[in-house]
Image (cartoon, rainbow, N blue to C red; front, side, top):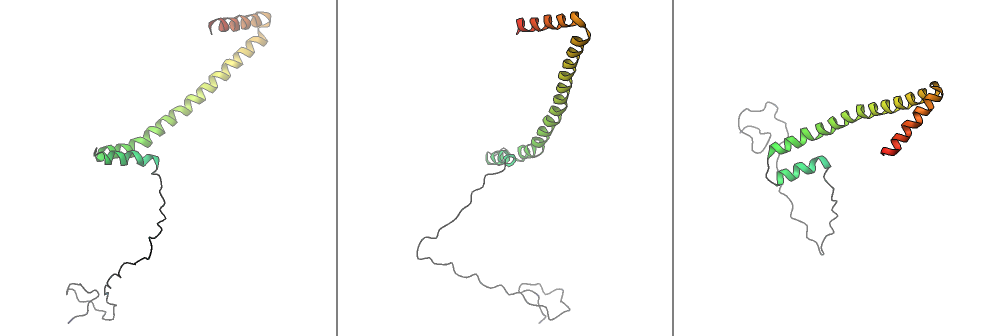
Length: 129
């Protein structure tokens, strides 16, 4: 009889090194018997927000397409909105500062006509708003 590395090994090929340890599975012990009910400490963790939608879609039987869309398109939409909001915010800051600068220059350089034009503009804004 040839040496086996494992108890359920096929006879072919025969290992050349005969002093290999033989794996012999041991039976699993009997379950523990308690005198009283054991205390179970269970930690419940909330699913990450990006995975919750996927778990709901799979549980509802919608299928893998919805899960793939949630995995790939969800972060892409968030990135798209963020990357679009940053330049728009910067553009708004530039426009506000330019308008403030033009108003300041008109008031200082225009003399009395510039000041009266700025006052008329402010009055017209107050009447509209």
